[in-house]
Length: 64
Image 1 (cartoon, rainbow, N blue to C red):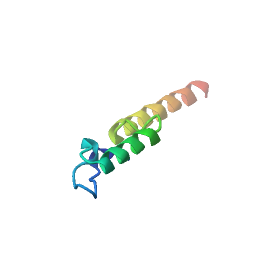
Image 2: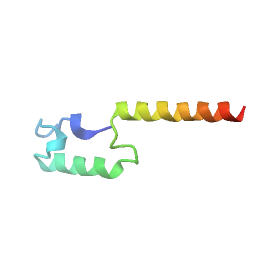
Image 3: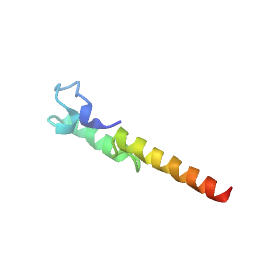
Image 4: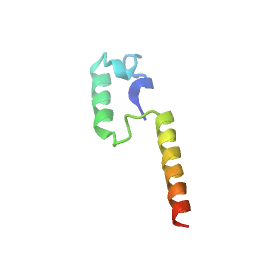
């Protein structure tokens, strides 16, 4: 999950702005927990999956 759409329960501001200590702590925690694909938006992940599936289909056709 990306933190750009999360709203802080403490100050009611977006967490990505980091207005209060709670926002800043949660923003830091979310940045540390992110994996290699956490920075990509969902559309980019879908496009990446489609490209990988297409590559697998081409490899399967070449070997058959």
